[in-house]
Length: 210
Image 1 (cartoon, rainbow, N blue to C red):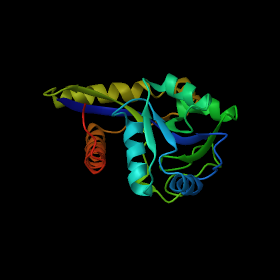
Image 2 (image 1 turned 135 degrees about the vertical axis):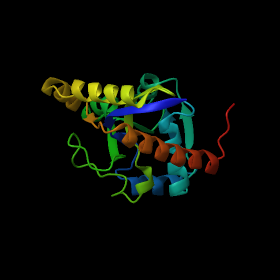
Image 3 (image 1 turned 90 degrees about the vertical axis):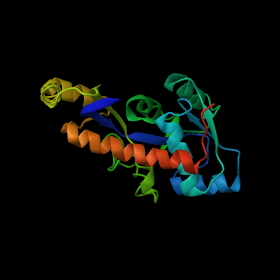
Image 4 (image 1 turned 60 degrees about the vertical axis):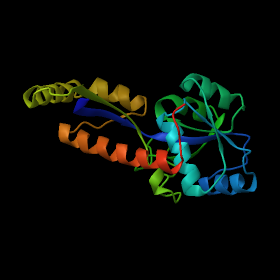
C-alpha cells in the first residue's frame, strides 16, 4: 500500500482516427461503428491500461461493437495506426500530437475537462455528448504506507518548488502537459474517484485477468 504525496501533471488524451476513416466527429464515429459492428479496431497500449479501460467505457456508453486490440506500448500502437493497421486510438497529447500535426491522424475529441490550447478546434468528450469519457493522463508521487505526515508534507512542498521554474513550465507546455499539483489530500481524493470509476467499468465490461 502507498500514501499519496502529490499529483504532478495532467495531460489531455486525444481520441483520433486514421485519416482514411470517413468520420470527423464522435457522433459520426458512433454512427459508423453501429453501421459496421465488429469492423472497427481500437488500438490500446496494452490490456488493463487506462486507454484500454477508456475504450471499454466508450463501448458501454455508445452501445457499439468495437474490437479492442492491445499492443505492447505506445510506440507500436502509434506505428500501427499511422500504417492504417487500426483506425482508432486514444493517446496522451504528448505522444500523439506530432501525428495529428502531420495530417496522418484526425482528432475527434479531447478527453480532458476543457479544450486544449494545442488543438482549440477539437471539442471535448463532454461537448461531444459523452461526459463520462473524461480521462486524462496524469503522473503523481506516492510514498510507502505509514510514512509520517510531516515527511509527506515536506515531499509535497519539494515537488511544488521543483515545478515553479519558468523553463520547467515552458517545457511541459511544449509537450502538452499541464502542471496540476495540489495537496496530498487532493491526490487521495482523485485516486479514490479514479479507482471507483474504473472498478465499475471493469465489472460492467466483464473484464477478466488472464
